Image (cartoon, rainbow, N blue to C red; front, side, top):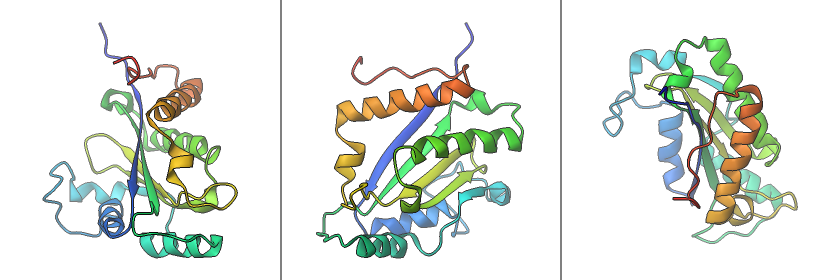
Length: 185
């Protein structure tokens, strides 16, 4: 039986100091990546942005939070990183143009649920085994509150996000499967 490729989306929340480390990874500012041996620096020139950051990630997050008039605490989530990809076999034999189209579609999906002006960066990594996109945004709600909880939600809402992502992506990529739901496992 042939392995079906899966649509994959993950969220990670960040409070502050670690945002610089995430930026360093996403933007490939280091010469060596001891923590991730899968990165092939000779292929990093193939990486590309769908959203290019205006300034440093943390500075952009703080600026957006300030402009929205939000008060913060030390434990406030200031940035959410979403990783979009698919199983390795999905990308096999796809051209750069086809890969770009896949990630543009993933960006369009998130843009339906989160204002694009809150997005700091969307960078596609082609220098690892499987192409993937890191999309970072400030968790500002439509009414300008800083609330990752309202945007991402709890475990049940995370399953719903996965369902919505798969439904969106499978319209253009019907070969993609929805992974097993955490509610079923």
